[in-house]
Image (cartoon, rainbow, N blue to C red; front, top):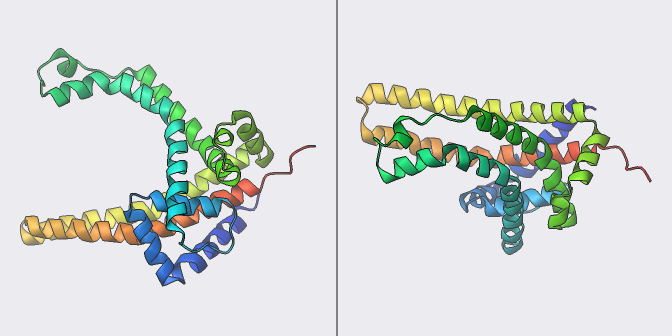
Length: 241
């Protein structure tokens, strides 16, 4: 698999679709502000293979598609939510009740078996969900988002090792710049605090600037990752007759 070509294509797609289209970039920022619902609808258009990057229009359809994609992700997350509730439910109830001296709080210890199981589910869902989401986007059928056999077969035609390596590559390409930006603003916040004696107004201003910066760059990474996943999905060998 030519990962360099996939990355180059995703970068070109993002540059032409976001960097070189200021109005589209502004619309995508608005789509993120609106609880990311229309942004998820825009991702659906990318998953369907629209080239070049589609316009940010028909907002009603974007919202409907975005809600559908969010429902797919939520359903896939149910096992994690169930395990999390069983593991941390008593602790959360004790905290919410304000009874911090109850045995449920003072003697609480996590069930490491359940914690490990939750992490295993997170890894498995992280591997399967991109293919499930693209299948849903292209068929517009909820059943296809949970067609486990077809999803596994598609990944097999990509190649399990190549597919997982591809997911790791895009995770690094997205996570490292975001962590760098967050680190910069953390350092900026600390420096501002030291200079101003940790003035509440100065810290609040730093937080506002950081939020605005994240809003500004988030469409870039979202579009890049969606296009990358789409190209990875389309790299599968043809299905056997």
